[in-house]
Length: 457
Length: 176
Image (cartoon, rainbow over all chains, first blue to last red; front, top):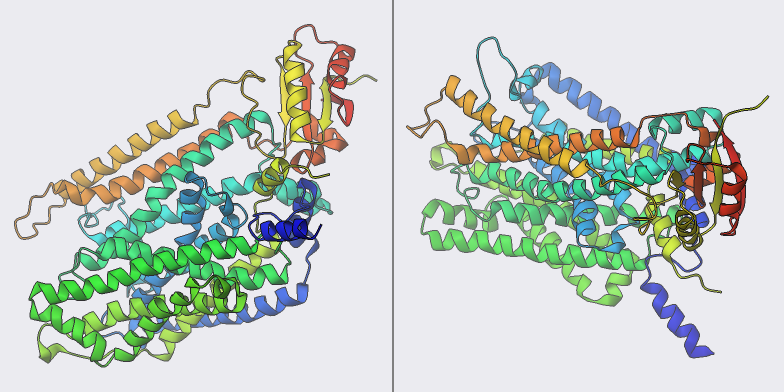
């Protein structure tokens, strides 16, 4: 009898759904979180902290609108400071959701099922945080609509040959399509919440939000077609967005930016930071809400492996930057490379190397990867590392201009930091509102998994 | 007082028993069947007559329109608002591709969602099946088959008997 138990124990680690889960149990367990509110104390504590940070963001942006961008550390030569660093960081984090939902769906990776809803929501909130930065960095944010093509009485048009305008279209399309993809995925789950809600108000609210979804055969018929096609559209979209962000840099002639490796290397970095943020958030949440039966050890293991693979592509990007600088024979390119390693911002560079290149190597070991605490620390380090990467790219390339007479230093001010932490608060607050009101795991897809599971006697 | 009947509806506890019942009902010649399932079941094709979903065609047309519109907009804008960048050609089409691509995706996605909702008849907040108290489980863990009353030669008792042959959890009449 003993070996049989061991085999079952061993296979349990490899399963995407813990044994004994049925359609009824997954529906009950997931819908209980928004409807019956388990662990309200944890929720309130986390939400309150985040909310204070959101108030800080409001204050920072209010002060910015009053005084102008001079309250930040930006100046000439470093005119792109924290705002652009944070923008690129957030938009990168916003890449895991669509990657998991769309690309893994098209590749028939069944393990995406229990994490896709949460990561899609994370994508939306990260893109919302990202979108704030270019707009408040405008200097005259009241004219933000000048970025859009509209029938202007003076006959003016945006410069369509500029990557910065491509960015406007890429980010707004990405935000819209991600929202649509997420909402379409939510429709059947909102109907489930409608049918399980205890009060008339909740029934009506979820009933309106689900647009009267009945799960009818004809609904599913069109729905499935749409979902797979949206995934097909979102897959190249997610790759295009960070490529265009990469082109924002690569099309400039600045040494350290003007590099053909930027678009693919930025995409890999985006997926890298996205997966690390998913792990950072999901490891504590699955413990608090006891979702280990649905977000299993196997999910964490697979995400860790994707993260490590992306880490290697990013490391190759770093190597390529140095190799190209050396081979180019251009003294300015070579100087930027050397200045990154030993210049005034060298501590940032070495911290970046530690976080993004060295820390993920611990994940080679299956034992360390299986250790939740180690995995969490590595994922957290990668989050920090990816922020540092963008800092190093933006600041070190700008602060030493071609002529030594126009060299300068960049020092972030209090308002730079308060805006950064404010958006982190906004992100966390939105995540907690999402957990409170919507199912964070797709009940529909989990039911489909459970319904197809072989019934054991 | 008699109410108009919408049909006879049975519920099943598993995907296997539901598909078996659907097959049996379809073999008995019933065509006006509504099914309600907690997730999209693969393998219903052929059992319920259903035309090919035109969502893909809608998205293709919308995407092509949006994409060519975007390309035309950029061509037009650079022509009427001429910026000479070091003598480079004003019709520098490779630079127009990113925005063309983004707007193709945007219009295709939005049209796809609108098309899906329109084809599925949503949003529609009321429906006869909602009056059935069992129906709450259609979005949770039960699979429903409803033989509609507009079936030619519909008889309540025959429809009920046809559904009962597949051993459902229950069979009830649904009123409009």
